[in-house]
Image (cartoon, rainbow, N blue to C red):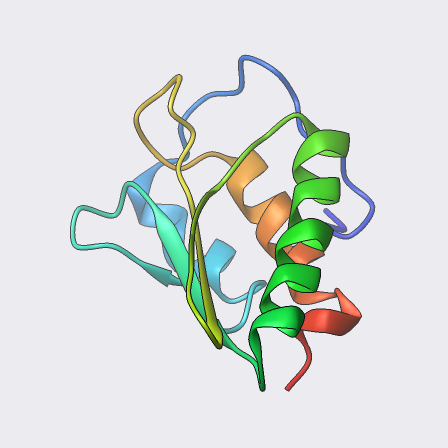
Length: 109
């Protein structure tokens, strides 16, 4: 599956935890939380303006995919985390959005 071109699917099922490594390999920089029910990535920027530009770009993806992350923003850091709340676990939707966020020009080091 090409995650950059994929569209999130409503009512998607949880991924088996045994497949987590395969999915994580497709989204460099994203790490699972301790429970393996969410993935997160920390993005660092030069200033707050860049953080906000990134946050707005993430919001565009979230809106287009109808799949919304939790975000924590500070002066030069944005942390984005995904969990499919309807299944209280990770789903393919989380990885679709993570891949698309990784592809943002704002996300490049």
